[in-house]
Image (tube, rainbow, N blue to C red; front, side, top):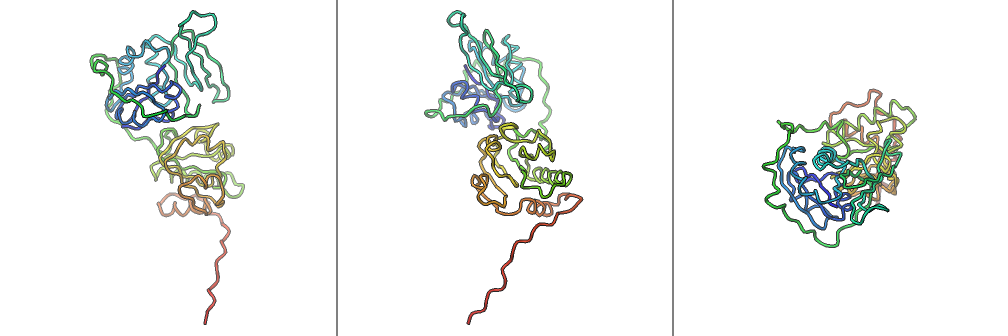
Length: 343
């Protein structure tokens, strides 16, 4: 069993370490910055890397990888955009079934089969992660693993990192692939949360009153703020259930799993269901009136203040479009009177 992970300029997709752990610590890292990316895997025992440069060619890469993994009964990849692109092509090259969106996957012999028969057992997620279905494949397979499916333990020691043999380099094998003319930066307003390196999230504490339209406008401002910081907007389940922002922006165990460099939480209490989808952000900033909120306790920087008032002030300073209804009145904090005079 081996994992295959695609690196982009040395950055690994979310769920990379989970996939490596599911594969027992064995991984092939391909793409740009593959060697550097392989060195970042905490769950790896052994890493083989193959530098393929920018402009990933999934069809050609699948044809190149196929002879390297044909003796491996199970190949597993993260269900990241690159993983979802490469996995079906590799499955086709190997003549194997594809098990997509697995929550867990393992290679084992089914009862009644001859010893040594490769069989794959998986649990796959369907109906927007509301249903888990068992899937058994009588033979080798390729699978994609949903990020956030399992916990990851650090490998026992430093991984062995080495390049693939010279014969493995992408040279003579070619398949029809799109000709990449340029890599266009993602639209920060609509980009996949799982790909964002900076995420700005709003929770119930960002909204005052019971005017849903006003709440939607506040979250629209939050999306502008996220884009201004080069990131994507996220939300808690309370916010998506209320209709203030779309469900595709929900972070948590019942939403998207993220792993950003920077995570900024406006009015997010830090409930376990939400924190379960955070991964391991490098830096966390919490804006909340509750100094003892779990999110504030997790933060590298905690700002104990009104989240909506701060968002409006930042919006003005960034020159963003403020909600048409204007900023609601917030209770004024008590101020100290003049200091008494002393003789």
